[in-house]
Length: 119
Image 1 (cartoon, helix red, strand yellow):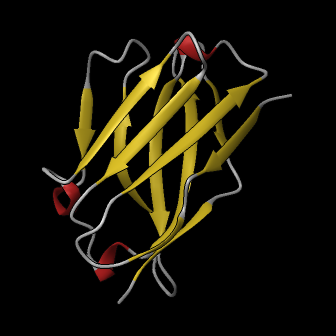
Image 2 (tube, rainbow, N blue to C red):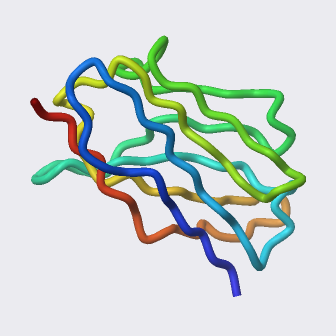
């Protein structure tokens, strides 16, 4: 059974930093592309950052480029999202997602972790 468990969310002031982590189990982690999504109240879920299965390729939403960094540790089955210079508009529930393309497996989702940026 695939499980993705996010952690690291919380309340932070504007300009602050948080580091989210997602621990994966029940899958061959190194064969999955991993992605962070977020969903703010009343809005659709949106892609934040994604990383290839080897970690050699990353991509970011324009809104977070230069502030967020996605990374992964295939030895520990974890993917992280370092978030710096946080803004109130970053407030959302952040979700971890795993997808394997060939053969297609997933997508699998975590339960989400709340990030609130407020003074």
